[in-house]
Length: 394
Image 1: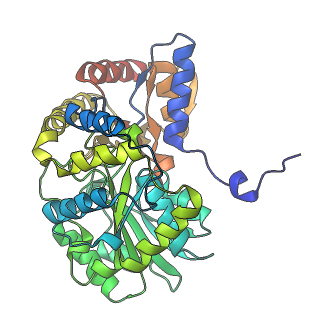
Image 2: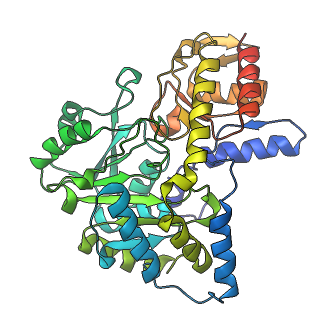
Protein backbone atom coordinates (compact mmCIF):
# COMPACT_ATOMS: atom_id res chain seq x y z
CA UNK A 1 0.00 0.00 0.00
CA UNK A 2 1.39 3.40 -1.00
CA UNK A 3 1.67 5.57 2.11
CA UNK A 4 3.55 8.37 0.32
CA UNK A 5 2.10 11.86 0.08
CA UNK A 6 0.09 13.00 -2.93
CA UNK A 7 2.73 15.70 -3.32
CA UNK A 8 5.54 13.25 -4.05
CA UNK A 9 3.34 10.82 -5.98
CA UNK A 10 2.32 13.63 -8.35
CA UNK A 11 5.87 14.95 -8.76
CA UNK A 12 7.69 14.12 -11.99
CA UNK A 13 11.29 12.90 -11.82
CA UNK A 14 13.75 15.40 -13.32
CA UNK A 15 14.06 14.26 -16.95
CA UNK A 16 17.66 15.40 -17.31
CA UNK A 17 18.73 13.53 -14.18
CA UNK A 18 16.67 10.47 -15.19
CA UNK A 19 18.38 10.34 -18.60
CA UNK A 20 21.80 10.73 -16.97
CA UNK A 21 20.96 7.84 -14.60
CA UNK A 22 19.82 5.65 -17.53
CA UNK A 23 23.06 6.46 -19.37
CA UNK A 24 25.07 5.48 -16.26
CA UNK A 25 23.18 2.16 -16.06
CA UNK A 26 24.02 1.35 -19.68
CA UNK A 27 27.66 2.30 -19.11
CA UNK A 28 27.73 -0.08 -16.13
CA UNK A 29 26.56 -2.81 -18.55
CA UNK A 30 29.64 -2.06 -20.65
CA UNK A 31 27.98 0.10 -23.32
CA UNK A 32 29.95 3.07 -24.68
CA UNK A 33 27.45 5.87 -24.08
CA UNK A 34 28.21 9.46 -25.08
CA UNK A 35 26.37 11.76 -22.69
CA UNK A 36 24.91 14.88 -24.29
CA UNK A 37 22.04 15.06 -21.80
CA UNK A 38 23.40 16.98 -18.82
CA UNK A 39 23.98 20.72 -18.69
CA UNK A 40 27.39 20.31 -17.14
CA UNK A 41 30.57 21.91 -18.50
CA UNK A 42 33.33 19.35 -19.09
CA UNK A 43 35.94 21.83 -17.84
CA UNK A 44 37.59 21.64 -14.44
CA UNK A 45 36.83 24.42 -11.98
CA UNK A 46 39.51 27.10 -12.57
CA UNK A 47 42.59 26.70 -10.35
CA UNK A 48 42.31 30.16 -8.78
CA UNK A 49 38.88 29.21 -7.40
CA UNK A 50 40.09 25.80 -6.15
CA UNK A 51 42.99 27.54 -4.37
CA UNK A 52 40.52 29.82 -2.57
CA UNK A 53 38.62 26.74 -1.34
CA UNK A 54 41.84 25.11 -0.06
CA UNK A 55 42.73 28.36 1.68
CA UNK A 56 39.29 28.40 3.36
CA UNK A 57 39.79 24.83 4.60
CA UNK A 58 43.20 25.77 6.01
CA UNK A 59 41.67 28.82 7.69
CA UNK A 60 39.21 26.47 9.43
CA UNK A 61 35.97 27.66 7.88
CA UNK A 62 33.85 24.81 9.19
CA UNK A 63 30.98 26.34 11.16
CA UNK A 64 27.38 27.01 10.22
CA UNK A 65 27.15 29.95 7.84
CA UNK A 66 24.54 32.73 8.09
CA UNK A 67 21.32 31.43 6.50
CA UNK A 68 21.46 34.00 3.68
CA UNK A 69 25.23 33.72 3.11
CA UNK A 70 28.49 35.22 4.37
CA UNK A 71 28.45 39.03 4.36
CA UNK A 72 31.68 39.02 2.30
CA UNK A 73 30.03 36.82 -0.35
CA UNK A 74 26.91 38.99 -0.42
CA UNK A 75 29.13 42.03 -0.90
CA UNK A 76 30.88 40.26 -3.81
CA UNK A 77 27.46 39.46 -5.32
CA UNK A 78 26.38 43.10 -4.97
CA UNK A 79 29.55 44.25 -6.79
CA UNK A 80 29.03 41.60 -9.48
CA UNK A 81 25.41 42.71 -10.06
CA UNK A 82 26.61 46.32 -10.41
CA UNK A 83 29.60 45.48 -12.65
CA UNK A 84 27.93 42.98 -14.98
CA UNK A 85 24.25 43.89 -14.88
CA UNK A 86 24.00 47.55 -13.84
CA UNK A 87 21.81 46.47 -10.90
CA UNK A 88 21.95 48.05 -7.46
CA UNK A 89 21.15 45.75 -4.54
CA UNK A 90 21.76 46.05 -0.80
CA UNK A 91 22.86 43.33 1.64
CA UNK A 92 19.32 42.45 2.83
CA UNK A 93 18.26 41.92 -0.82
CA UNK A 94 20.74 39.08 -1.44
CA UNK A 95 20.13 35.46 -0.42
CA UNK A 96 22.70 32.73 -1.11
CA UNK A 97 21.34 29.19 -1.52
CA UNK A 98 22.43 25.63 -2.26
CA UNK A 99 22.34 26.14 -6.03
CA UNK A 100 20.04 28.28 -8.15
CA UNK A 101 17.52 25.40 -8.01
CA UNK A 102 17.03 26.04 -4.29
CA UNK A 103 16.75 29.77 -5.00
CA UNK A 104 13.84 29.00 -7.36
CA UNK A 105 12.21 26.63 -4.87
CA UNK A 106 12.44 29.32 -2.17
CA UNK A 107 10.79 31.89 -4.45
CA UNK A 108 7.92 29.57 -5.34
CA UNK A 109 7.37 28.63 -1.70
CA UNK A 110 7.21 32.23 -0.48
CA UNK A 111 5.27 33.74 -3.40
CA UNK A 112 2.65 31.21 -4.49
CA UNK A 113 -0.72 30.33 -2.99
CA UNK A 114 -2.89 27.43 -4.22
CA UNK A 115 -4.21 28.23 -7.70
CA UNK A 116 -1.79 31.07 -8.46
CA UNK A 117 -0.75 30.92 -12.11
CA UNK A 118 2.86 31.14 -13.31
CA UNK A 119 3.46 31.87 -16.98
CA UNK A 120 6.26 29.75 -18.47
CA UNK A 121 7.39 30.52 -22.03
CA UNK A 122 8.05 27.10 -23.65
CA UNK A 123 10.53 25.63 -23.78
CA UNK A 124 11.45 26.26 -20.15
CA UNK A 125 14.01 24.71 -17.85
CA UNK A 126 12.88 21.23 -16.89
CA UNK A 127 12.25 21.89 -13.16
CA UNK A 128 10.26 25.16 -13.38
CA UNK A 129 6.92 23.45 -13.85
CA UNK A 130 7.30 20.98 -10.98
CA UNK A 131 8.79 23.56 -8.60
CA UNK A 132 5.68 25.67 -9.25
CA UNK A 133 3.38 22.67 -8.71
CA UNK A 134 5.15 21.77 -5.44
CA UNK A 135 4.04 25.14 -4.09
CA UNK A 136 0.46 24.54 -5.32
CA UNK A 137 0.90 26.97 -8.21
CA UNK A 138 -0.43 26.31 -11.71
CA UNK A 139 2.10 26.40 -14.60
CA UNK A 140 0.70 28.12 -17.71
CA UNK A 141 2.70 27.11 -20.76
CA UNK A 142 3.07 29.59 -23.62
CA UNK A 143 4.24 27.88 -26.79
CA UNK A 144 6.94 29.57 -28.83
CA UNK A 145 8.33 28.59 -32.21
CA UNK A 146 11.75 27.82 -33.64
CA UNK A 147 11.05 30.53 -36.27
CA UNK A 148 10.96 33.11 -33.45
CA UNK A 149 14.03 31.57 -31.76
CA UNK A 150 11.77 30.16 -29.04
CA UNK A 151 11.06 33.59 -27.53
CA UNK A 152 7.70 34.70 -26.16
CA UNK A 153 6.25 37.86 -27.71
CA UNK A 154 4.45 40.67 -25.89
CA UNK A 155 1.21 39.63 -27.60
CA UNK A 156 1.57 36.05 -26.35
CA UNK A 157 2.25 37.27 -22.82
CA UNK A 158 -0.81 39.53 -22.88
CA UNK A 159 -2.99 36.66 -24.10
CA UNK A 160 -1.77 34.34 -21.32
CA UNK A 161 -2.51 36.72 -18.44
CA UNK A 162 -5.62 36.00 -16.35
CA UNK A 163 -6.85 37.36 -13.00
CA UNK A 164 -4.99 34.42 -11.38
CA UNK A 165 -1.58 35.24 -12.92
CA UNK A 166 0.95 35.82 -10.14
CA UNK A 167 4.33 35.41 -11.84
CA UNK A 168 6.27 34.83 -15.05
CA UNK A 169 9.46 32.73 -15.00
CA UNK A 170 11.97 32.66 -17.84
CA UNK A 171 15.69 32.13 -18.44
CA UNK A 172 17.94 34.19 -20.71
CA UNK A 173 20.15 32.76 -22.11
CA UNK A 174 17.58 29.99 -22.11
CA UNK A 175 17.95 26.40 -21.08
CA UNK A 176 17.08 24.43 -23.26
CA UNK A 177 16.93 26.61 -26.38
CA UNK A 178 19.97 28.88 -25.94
CA UNK A 179 17.79 31.89 -26.83
CA UNK A 180 18.75 35.33 -25.51
CA UNK A 181 16.16 38.06 -25.00
CA UNK A 182 17.34 41.47 -26.22
CA UNK A 183 16.72 44.68 -24.31
CA UNK A 184 13.97 45.64 -26.79
CA UNK A 185 12.24 42.25 -26.43
CA UNK A 186 12.29 42.48 -22.64
CA UNK A 187 11.03 46.06 -22.80
CA UNK A 188 8.06 44.88 -24.86
CA UNK A 189 7.26 42.27 -22.20
CA UNK A 190 7.72 44.87 -19.45
CA UNK A 191 5.27 47.21 -21.21
CA UNK A 192 2.63 44.49 -20.97
CA UNK A 193 3.44 43.84 -17.30
CA UNK A 194 3.18 47.59 -16.56
CA UNK A 195 -0.57 47.21 -17.04
CA UNK A 196 -0.64 44.36 -14.50
CA UNK A 197 1.16 45.65 -11.39
CA UNK A 198 0.53 42.52 -9.30
CA UNK A 199 2.53 40.16 -11.52
CA UNK A 200 6.12 39.36 -10.49
CA UNK A 201 9.02 38.20 -12.65
CA UNK A 202 11.70 35.57 -12.06
CA UNK A 203 14.64 36.24 -14.37
CA UNK A 204 16.94 33.21 -14.36
CA UNK A 205 20.36 34.40 -15.56
CA UNK A 206 22.55 31.42 -14.69
CA UNK A 207 23.95 31.33 -18.28
CA UNK A 208 24.57 35.09 -18.59
CA UNK A 209 28.31 34.78 -19.31
CA UNK A 210 27.84 32.04 -21.92
CA UNK A 211 26.52 34.51 -24.45
CA UNK A 212 27.80 34.58 -28.01
CA UNK A 213 26.16 37.80 -29.15
CA UNK A 214 27.33 39.95 -26.23
CA UNK A 215 25.11 42.42 -24.42
CA UNK A 216 23.30 40.48 -21.71
CA UNK A 217 20.31 42.42 -20.37
CA UNK A 218 18.42 41.96 -17.08
CA UNK A 219 14.72 42.68 -16.62
CA UNK A 220 15.51 44.38 -13.28
CA UNK A 221 17.52 47.04 -15.12
CA UNK A 222 14.21 48.67 -16.04
CA UNK A 223 13.37 51.10 -13.25
CA UNK A 224 9.67 50.23 -13.44
CA UNK A 225 10.40 46.47 -13.11
CA UNK A 226 13.13 46.43 -10.45
CA UNK A 227 10.70 46.10 -7.50
CA UNK A 228 8.81 43.30 -9.24
CA UNK A 229 11.73 41.19 -10.44
CA UNK A 230 13.78 38.51 -8.71
CA UNK A 231 17.12 38.01 -10.44
CA UNK A 232 18.43 34.46 -10.03
CA UNK A 233 22.03 33.50 -10.72
CA UNK A 234 24.81 31.19 -9.60
CA UNK A 235 28.24 29.82 -10.46
CA UNK A 236 27.48 26.32 -11.79
CA UNK A 237 27.64 26.98 -15.52
CA UNK A 238 30.02 29.85 -16.28
CA UNK A 239 32.60 28.82 -13.67
CA UNK A 240 32.27 25.03 -14.17
CA UNK A 241 31.18 24.63 -10.53
CA UNK A 242 28.06 22.46 -10.84
CA UNK A 243 28.88 20.31 -7.80
CA UNK A 244 29.78 23.23 -5.55
CA UNK A 245 26.07 24.09 -5.29
CA UNK A 246 25.96 27.86 -4.89
CA UNK A 247 23.16 30.02 -6.29
CA UNK A 248 21.84 33.40 -5.25
CA UNK A 249 19.11 35.96 -5.77
CA UNK A 250 18.82 39.73 -5.85
CA UNK A 251 15.25 40.64 -4.89
CA UNK A 252 12.99 43.24 -3.30
CA UNK A 253 13.66 43.28 0.48
CA UNK A 254 10.37 41.62 1.44
CA UNK A 255 10.87 38.70 -0.95
CA UNK A 256 14.51 38.23 0.12
CA UNK A 257 13.49 38.25 3.81
CA UNK A 258 10.84 35.62 3.12
CA UNK A 259 13.33 33.42 1.22
CA UNK A 260 15.76 33.74 4.13
CA UNK A 261 13.00 32.67 6.55
CA UNK A 262 12.03 29.70 4.36
CA UNK A 263 15.63 28.56 3.93
CA UNK A 264 16.18 28.85 7.68
CA UNK A 265 13.65 26.08 8.18
CA UNK A 266 14.66 23.92 5.19
CA UNK A 267 18.46 23.81 4.85
CA UNK A 268 20.00 26.80 6.67
CA UNK A 269 23.08 28.32 5.04
CA UNK A 270 24.93 26.91 2.03
CA UNK A 271 28.27 25.09 2.24
CA UNK A 272 30.94 27.19 3.99
CA UNK A 273 33.93 26.21 1.81
CA UNK A 274 32.00 26.64 -1.46
CA UNK A 275 30.86 30.10 -0.34
CA UNK A 276 34.43 31.23 0.36
CA UNK A 277 35.54 29.98 -3.07
CA UNK A 278 32.66 31.80 -4.78
CA UNK A 279 33.79 35.11 -3.29
CA UNK A 280 37.00 34.70 -5.31
CA UNK A 281 35.09 33.56 -8.42
CA UNK A 282 32.77 36.57 -8.45
CA UNK A 283 35.46 39.12 -7.63
CA UNK A 284 37.47 37.95 -10.67
CA UNK A 285 37.07 39.70 -13.99
CA UNK A 286 34.78 37.66 -16.30
CA UNK A 287 37.65 37.61 -18.83
CA UNK A 288 39.20 34.86 -16.68
CA UNK A 289 36.52 32.41 -17.84
CA UNK A 290 36.45 33.60 -21.46
CA UNK A 291 38.47 30.57 -22.63
CA UNK A 292 35.49 28.35 -21.74
CA UNK A 293 33.00 30.61 -23.51
CA UNK A 294 35.22 30.72 -26.63
CA UNK A 295 35.36 26.92 -26.66
CA UNK A 296 31.57 26.63 -26.31
CA UNK A 297 31.23 28.96 -29.28
CA UNK A 298 33.49 26.68 -31.35
CA UNK A 299 31.46 23.66 -30.30
CA UNK A 300 28.22 25.39 -31.23
CA UNK A 301 29.55 25.99 -34.75
CA UNK A 302 30.72 22.38 -34.96
CA UNK A 303 27.47 20.79 -33.79
CA UNK A 304 25.26 23.01 -35.97
CA UNK A 305 27.35 22.11 -39.03
CA UNK A 306 27.14 18.40 -38.24
CA UNK A 307 23.39 18.46 -37.53
CA UNK A 308 22.75 20.32 -40.79
CA UNK A 309 23.93 17.16 -42.59
CA UNK A 310 21.20 15.02 -41.01
CA UNK A 311 17.94 15.10 -42.90
CA UNK A 312 14.93 15.86 -40.70
CA UNK A 313 16.75 17.93 -38.06
CA UNK A 314 15.50 21.52 -38.07
CA UNK A 315 17.74 23.85 -36.07
CA UNK A 316 18.12 27.54 -35.38
CA UNK A 317 21.29 29.24 -34.12
CA UNK A 318 21.22 29.60 -30.32
CA UNK A 319 22.83 32.78 -29.01
CA UNK A 320 23.88 31.50 -25.59
CA UNK A 321 24.17 28.60 -23.10
CA UNK A 322 25.48 25.29 -24.51
CA UNK A 323 22.47 23.55 -26.02
CA UNK A 324 20.84 23.05 -29.38
CA UNK A 325 17.13 22.32 -29.45
CA UNK A 326 16.38 20.78 -32.86
CA UNK A 327 12.86 20.06 -34.07
CA UNK A 328 12.75 16.34 -34.91
CA UNK A 329 9.00 15.99 -35.59
CA UNK A 330 9.67 14.86 -39.18
CA UNK A 331 10.58 11.46 -37.68
CA UNK A 332 7.28 11.06 -35.80
CA UNK A 333 5.16 8.20 -37.12
CA UNK A 334 8.16 6.48 -38.71
CA UNK A 335 9.50 3.05 -37.79
CA UNK A 336 13.29 2.76 -37.69
CA UNK A 337 15.05 -0.53 -36.89
CA UNK A 338 11.74 -1.97 -35.73
CA UNK A 339 11.04 0.89 -33.34
CA UNK A 340 8.11 3.24 -33.97
CA UNK A 341 8.81 6.85 -33.07
CA UNK A 342 5.62 8.61 -31.98
CA UNK A 343 7.09 11.60 -30.15
CA UNK A 344 10.25 13.30 -28.88
CA UNK A 345 10.52 10.91 -25.92
CA UNK A 346 10.53 7.88 -28.25
CA UNK A 347 13.12 9.63 -30.43
CA UNK A 348 15.38 10.39 -27.47
CA UNK A 349 15.17 6.79 -26.22
CA UNK A 350 15.86 5.51 -29.73
CA UNK A 351 19.06 7.58 -29.87
CA UNK A 352 20.13 6.23 -26.48
CA UNK A 353 19.47 2.58 -27.34
CA UNK A 354 20.52 2.56 -31.01
CA UNK A 355 23.13 5.32 -31.29
CA UNK A 356 24.31 5.08 -27.66
CA UNK A 357 23.93 8.86 -27.35
CA UNK A 358 22.08 10.40 -24.39
CA UNK A 359 19.93 13.47 -25.16
CA UNK A 360 16.76 14.76 -23.44
CA UNK A 361 13.23 14.81 -24.79
CA UNK A 362 11.78 18.26 -25.39
CA UNK A 363 8.58 17.13 -23.67
CA UNK A 364 10.40 17.63 -20.35
CA UNK A 365 10.82 21.29 -21.29
CA UNK A 366 7.24 21.83 -22.45
CA UNK A 367 7.94 21.23 -26.15
CA UNK A 368 6.77 17.99 -27.76
CA UNK A 369 8.58 18.38 -31.11
CA UNK A 370 12.21 18.91 -30.06
CA UNK A 371 15.07 17.27 -28.21
CA UNK A 372 17.80 18.98 -26.22
CA UNK A 373 21.39 18.20 -27.11
CA UNK A 374 24.09 19.58 -24.81
CA UNK A 375 27.41 20.50 -26.39
CA UNK A 376 29.15 20.81 -23.02
CA UNK A 377 31.28 17.87 -24.16
CA UNK A 378 34.58 17.67 -26.04
CA UNK A 379 34.69 18.30 -29.79
CA UNK A 380 35.74 14.68 -30.37
CA UNK A 381 32.74 13.42 -28.40
CA UNK A 382 30.41 15.74 -30.33
CA UNK A 383 31.80 14.53 -33.69
CA UNK A 384 31.43 10.87 -32.70
CA UNK A 385 27.95 11.38 -31.19
CA UNK A 386 26.49 13.09 -34.25
CA UNK A 387 28.12 10.48 -36.50
CA UNK A 388 26.39 7.75 -34.49
CA UNK A 389 23.05 9.57 -34.65
CA UNK A 390 23.37 10.00 -38.42
CA UNK A 391 24.20 6.29 -38.84
CA UNK A 392 21.33 5.12 -36.63
CA UNK A 393 18.82 7.27 -38.50
CA UNK A 394 20.03 6.24 -41.97
